[in-house]
Image (cartoon, rainbow, N blue to C red):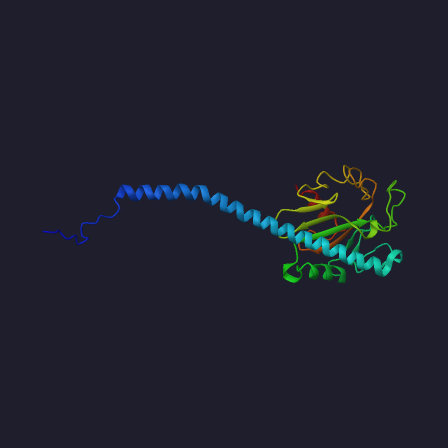
Length: 226
């Protein structure tokens, strides 16, 4: 005679087995979650870097257009980029945040409007006539005045600051130790491949609330970045 199994004899997990499964899942979570969070952080950093590169490429493209249009006649006296609202009497640093140049750069980089970065600033070879003798010996060609040599980029208030300097992007702030080690007080580069160039800074996007590029509060904030 055959015995038929109705299935009522099937047993579920015992309490011990459930505990083992839970412990295994907890161990897997402990291993995987940090890796997953790290992956998310890395993806964000890659996004920030891509947007930073897009912004600087757009700025350089706009500068090429200005060079083709104005050349050595310049668009605005001591400023190769027109449309600045506030300008530093010391080194000619200029706030462009409300200018057509800034608008075109951010639109080209697809970073306009609400997507505009927390802060974006570039520096080109200086065309400033102020403090020429006090700045000491430096060399700036016509091409230098339309070439981006430095950039500072922060996409959000909490994102890592990125710097374009010496031809590459870095997370190391070349101004972190003050202006006297890498840059003189007159924006002349004192060391590295750019040694001897005088730079002029143009602020393109500023949501920092630290003031304008002509304000010590802004520069003190920038130099505090590590």
